[in-house]
Length: 324
Image (cartoon, rainbow, N blue to C red):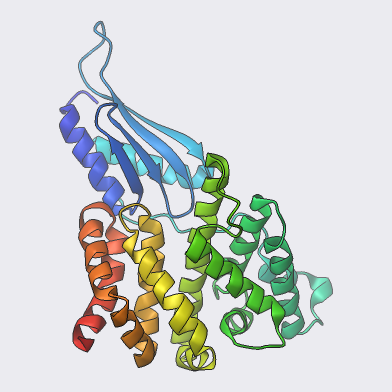
């Protein structure tokens, strides 16, 4: 890019990353940004000066490190367009599971047409639980990606998605599968890993970060679906101890991590906003956990680094300010 100074190009790229809610860690000495998107694509953006015998200008390199290529290309194109001054498409990439969608796979199989929705749901959840229990972290990720798809009415049948949401958060002593899923979510939010021993190297830590974010994404989709169908208040009442003592403190802690893990804070803020709308008891519990200050700090960080995070905090802040 020959027409602008490197500082101008860097500001354009930084603004693009903010508008598309891409997490970025900057290294000014190397003129580099390490980036992570909501759908777990990771890449680096670097600026280079041309060689002495070449024309003046700035070279922009966007290098993929991991993740879905199509999603990467969307972000890469947006970044390069922004660097050239062509404006920014500020729509962030949507997190889309890349593995098995149990609900769609089973529902779409003509040989399974006679199977009841209850059986389909039970099989899907049981399959996910079995994968969560495996030692292989990539299978754990597959399990949570499948659950995220299962509770999404746009990716599986709406009735199955709604029943999946109810099942996962319900306090049913007879349903051990749902209890195991909630236990896995609690472990990820509390410890950052399904097993406390799984923190020994960078590769394992990377898997655990993905699992923690998927667990928050799962909860966010569950609460949105239940609130939309006016079922969330009942679900909270039926399992109030888990919501009050386990979930609210963990969500507030996730919001507090906004500077280090803005994608986690985004989903946690979404969760809090929907839960506080549905329950005064949870509103009181969140206030006791100093959720207001956590959300305000997350909003302040998001307003300069992560647009979606800044937007997600607003409803929770409004409700907590009214309560206080």
